[in-house]
Image 1: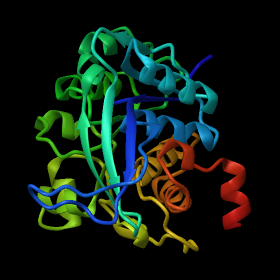
Image 2: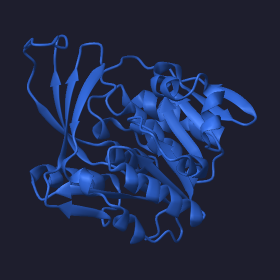
Image 3: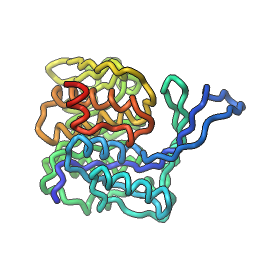
Length: 291
């Protein structure tokens, strides 16, 4: 089957524990039972896209272990193609996540197998029928840079969720169709939102949490408000939900503002449930809950 969207990025097992508060340096706090959930920025993005109807495959790596099996099962059950997810001799990546009562999280990532996603994996890809390639940075930077260049030369729209922030070559930034950052990452990169375009991308999106997102183009800035949700349960993976839904809509022909309007709804709905991938809504849920 031809995939209109490829996602290049990490696949991690999320080990989540609820805590009353985060420990200070040298301090121990007791938490709840550890919950193991499928995660990773790449896998999350792909699952979010698949749930809202995109034909999507993940380019990544997992270990030959139980966590790897959990991730493959989650991807496949969501409708994500896994033929491009290789099995590494290294252990599956793990994200250690603490969640406080207000739904906010802090995360430590051990990349594991994600470090084995290589430029050669990109060279073996077929871009026939692919409209969008979306990348994030929990896999080696050289692989992401290589993928952006290959996609651009193939006439595929490269999208980069620059999280965590890293320094990319100027040529890679100039080849980007869309740069996605949150407002804290944006502040590290440029003095203002319009300044993001000075880095080279054709457009940028700044995600603003519960306030929605800002779409930045040469024509100006369009702020897209989010929707109100009854309760914030867990913000883990909300940014990935946005990136996945945005990419799905771009691959299906929406313009950038239309895609962002849809993506903020998906991200908002995702925080009303626990976990990352298990919290992502379907297209039907987006329609029924937001009109």
